Length: 431
Image (cartoon, rainbow, N blue to C red; front, side, top):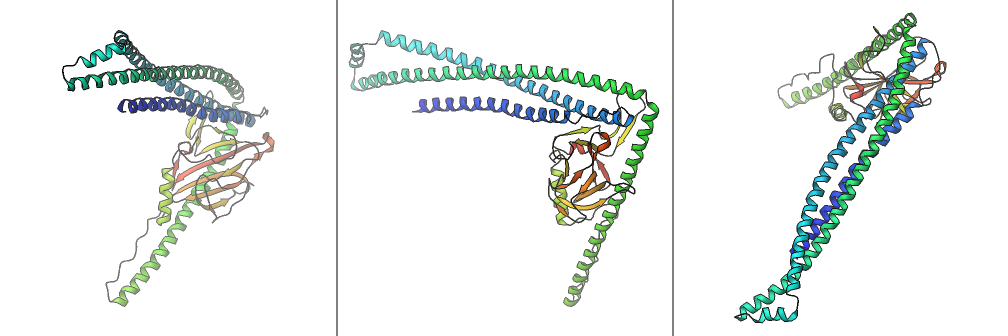
């Protein structure tokens, strides 16, 4: 019974290990498929044909974003190849051990078969049993004969199980090698496509160099608009901090007054006035603290704030544009290009603390407060929320503006703050 249970455990372990290998290959493939689809969808966004500086700058930004996505995908494929290599090496070691075990069991089984051939007749068995010198020895010899027959049968069964393990391990090894072969082909295809895109990028840069004067004027215009937006956002955040501070201060005063009245009525010592947070930071109640903590725990897991396929254009912070000497950009957030008709969506539960327009502009911008975190959504043509609304993760905020003068180019500018501190949105989004 013990040997039978041992065989059963071996068989179950073998099946479990095989399932783990299949699951690994499927998991890696599933992730790559999603990333590759994102790249394919984002390539449809590159439709501009304008030849002016603005159009070419926009095309360059879109193309650069797609190049970055493809590089990221190639790195994922490379990582998957390394994972498959590790799995292959592990399987080869397991197979080698299994084959050694199989050889050992075959030798033992052959030895037992040869022994039985020499002592195979009933007469020989009976002679062995009844030639005992005592009844106790007779009993032990009889039990030995029976146990040896059982032992040989179990050896045969072990041999079959071990052979099945070897066969399964060979199939797993073959599957991992096939997966690696396919990944190498996929990486080569993506590298060729990357080379084509980088060639397009270099051609665009050459054209833009020839238009240095117009390029600088366009960059200056964009930087001026960005400063206006950021100044307005900073002002709104300061106003929100002050509004929340005053609410907390009034609430604290009411609570202190009620406590003072109760203390006087009971003849107790009058409590001190409750303190509130200084200006410059949010005063948070219990609900806000819980929301802030939950938001912080979701770093890297927040949804991308647009619906449908997208491409992230450029980087966050200060960086130079490749190939354009002297051109340096300073982004307080990230630009996300989507398909025409796409909508902005909330990245987390929160409250709409502002819906505003810049003077002379038709587009709207939305601020959502998540405790002491704030997410900001720019370039909304038709907002569907108003100040004071409570929103859930993924809630639609409004339609993103599509520029009819530039083939309906649709870009959401997105920022993330912790109170007044600017954060890199790329580190917070689940991509």
